[in-house]
Each structure stands twice: as structure tokens, then as C-alpha cells.
Image 1 (cartoon, helix red, strand yellow):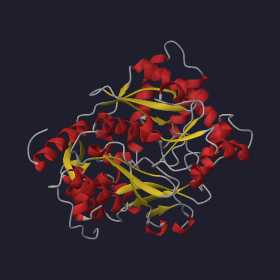
Image 2 (tube, helix red, strand yellow; image 1 turned 45 degrees about the horizontal axis):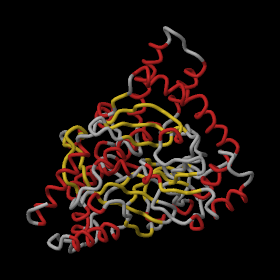
Image 3 (cartoon, one colour; image 1 turned 60 degrees about the vertical axis):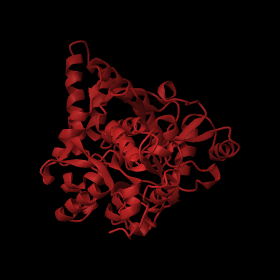
Image 4 (spheres, helix red, strand yellow; image 1 turned 45 degrees about the vertical axis):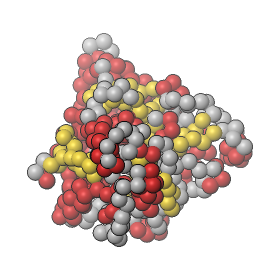
Length: 433
């Protein structure tokens, strides 16, 4: 590469962010993770977040991993599962290293069905475990019991084959039009996907009606029931779409674009295009800093982090980055309509481009702020706004909150990029607004 450090960076960032905005995701099918996820084995358990040694998992993510081992029949009881995980017979692996993302705990095993999303612009595929359904108690939320196992088996054995059949009949489902329409209907595509879910359900059920010329069996009725209640299905779909786009933007020398953000039980982590697969991490802020809407009178004292990779949606400009599109979320996020607008307007200061397809009506159809730049975060101290699901210490869904990640990993990445390309600025870094 030739040119000044600044011109090299600008060219690299233009290439990287173009991969994000030019992605054309298609929901291709549903399949067992062991059949489609790269590197997946019968003894692999994928989890959210930067990788940690097994002994460091202590809360809901630990419960979910042990539950997954029991669900797969890899251990007879919790003690045996712990022993096998401790000695490495069962391998805990970071989802992101397997072209996969996971909601909250992110736990996925070989037999569990995943949504398969293909980016038609690059041919790249990415995966996310299929949502378990409407119950607040789920593996996703750090709960394992017989009821969770029953629901997992129902999705695996009944719902996912029916949805795969329908998607095959449809020839796949293009997702960009659905995301574009959902933003115009009040979704942020992270904490709120009411419109996107309805659009998905309509498309799938229309295809079921076409199939009814041949037959509609009990599986299709179960699928219709699942679609009516599986509030977070489209989140898992759009997560895989964002992962495919972000992976396409990875590994571009000199680029300062953020390609992944996630949590495990203890750390926030991020990756940057020009720095490859390296994680930059920092401890999570106290749960008392979370602000939003919690169910049943719970407070932040009842909460605990259990991991999460739905933050991948923010890397493409959705979620908290698009808060101004999702006024119904104001009590989960910035508090008022004006606050939601200010929140998104602030995000333009730390991003590289406005998305040409994903637009916000409340901002005169301005494109969502897309392509988080670690240098701009380090210079301004403004961190990405993230809409995040809240979970209880004992496991279970507690509500939704606005999460502000620590700025330190952005600064670490900016400093390393500066060392590699000395003319790149990294400061000063004021306190976040």
C-alpha cells in the first residue's frame, strides 16, 4: 500500500464500511449447527463474548453451558458436565470464531438449529441459534431446567424443520427490505423487532398457504404458533445478517472500523478490521449503571450480566445507534423522544457513513449512523449506544436497558493502530457525554 497514513486509513475505511452497507443478506435456511457451522463438533459448546477459561464462568452463562451439555447427553449430571468442561473433554469456544453470534448467553451445541444467513454481495454465511420461544426462562437467559429442555426439543424437532421447508419453498427470504420497512415502523432491530417479526411472519405464512395446495401438516401449525409468540426470532436473524456483513469488513489493513462488540459474564470486548481477530477487553460497568425498563418491580440490584452478542446489530447502525427510529423504546433507552433523537445524532460523530438503505423517519429519513470508528471514539470519548436485554442474577429475562460500554478497549485499539501507523491521532479523550 502507498500514500500517507491518513490516506491509507481513509481508503481502508471506505472499503470496510462499503462491505457493511452493500451487504445483501438473505435468510437461506434453518439447519443443525453441526451440519453448517464451521469447526463445530459434537463436543463443542459455543458461547458469547471474548473467550475465557472455563473456571471463570460463574453465573448464568455457566448454567447455560452446563445445561447445554446435559441437553446433548454429553454428561449424566451437572458435576460430570463441570468435570468434562474443566479437563477440556468438552470445549467451550467463542461464537465469533465460528462465523456465529449468540444472543445473551449465546450457548449453542451441534444439534441445536441455527438460522443461516447468506450475504449475496460476498457469498459469506453467518449463523445464530434459533430463538427458543416466548418464555422468559430459557437457555438464552441463563436458565436450565426440564421445561427449557422440552422447549429446545420442540424447536429442534418440530418448528425448525417446518421453517426450513418453507424457506426452501421460498428460495430464501431477502432481509434488507424487511429491515428497511421495520425501521420505518418503529423498530430498532435490537430491543424492538415487533414490526420485523410481523413482516417475517406474514412472508412465511404466505408461503405456508402456497404449500397448502399440497399439504399443511401439524408441523406447519406448530410453526404458525411459534411465529406468533417467538418475539426474538427476527433478532437472531438480523444478528446473523450483521455478522456476515461485519466479517466481510474484517481484516482490511489500516481500517479502524469496529467489526464486533460483545460481552461474556465479566468483560466487554471488541474487534477492529485492521487488527484482525484480536480482542480488546475491559471489565463490564456495574449493573447499577444500566438504565431502562425492568419487569415485575425488579431493580438493577436484581440484574447480572450473562454475556451477549446482539451488539453486532450496533456495528451495522441498528439497535441503540438507531434509537431515533424506535420511539416506543424511549422508556427502555434515552427516556424521551428528544433524548432518542439526541442519542442517535451523537452516534454520527463516531461513525464513518450513513447507511443508504436503513433510514430514520424522525430524522427526515437520514441513514442510520454506520461503521463505528475506534479513533473517533477515542478522540471524543463518545461510546456506542447499545440497547441490551437485561437478565436476572438467578436467570431469566428482566427487561431492556441502555448499555454504555467502557471506552478503554476503543482506546487500546486506537493506540495499537497508532503504533502501527504513527501519524494516526488517538487523543485527547474527553469524558463521555
